[in-house]
Length: 85
Image (cartoon, rainbow, N blue to C red; front, side):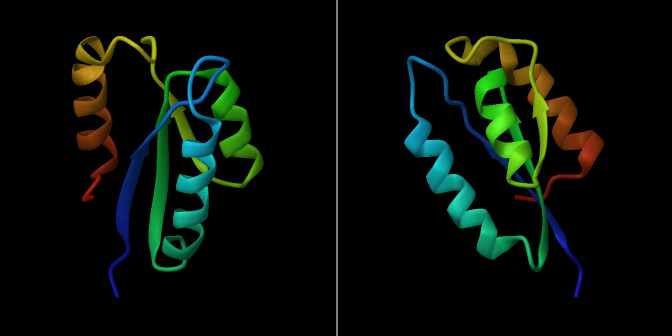
């Protein structure tokens, strides 16, 4: 079986959703057995939480509320890591 590289784009900080990050972590616990998981974030706070749970994480150089400017960086990550989902 070929493992897929799955990326999860999520953020959490003092303004937005820790619950969202925690739900994503719960979902990938099931997916990690047959797939490679990579989280993509903008905030150091959630980066630490994700890495402490044992998952790979890339921190973007943009702000969580500047989605348009992160597109090129995300495209580069998709190509570099051969993300399939």
